[in-house]
Length: 149
Image 1 (cartoon, rainbow, N blue to C red):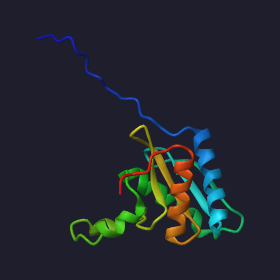
Image 2 (cartoon, one colour):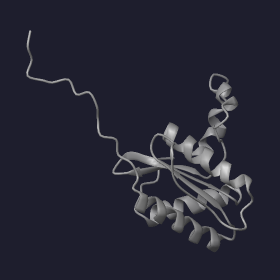
Image 3 (spheres, rainbow, N blue to C red):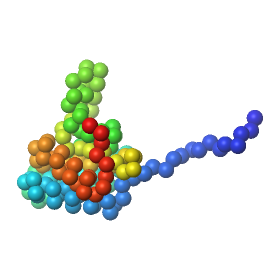
Image 4 (cartoon, rainbow, N blue to C red):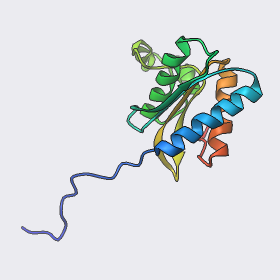
């Protein structure tokens, strides 16, 4: 039996550009300064691999690892990190809390462009509300879509 269709063995994977990742970091630092905190900012590709990173001089060293894990979590599950607090109350999902990279703290957002996740953004340095606010401001300023609540 022959068919006219050929098996497609791969699909193009959209990913945030280096220029957009750098612009996001700059936008986050601007928002954080306006809000009143210093931050570490991580941007990953959709697979959770680091694409760009910066930690402000005054940001504590632990913020570097936390920002990366927030970006990884957001990209991995295509959802904000603050939503994980509710998810982890479900005993069927709670075992994921033991995953060493899962970060259920506000400040991690999937980077969504034209309806597709192109990466993850993680911010650490302020309160979880400040991290979330800076993320939303930066994503909006650059024309990325915010995930549905």
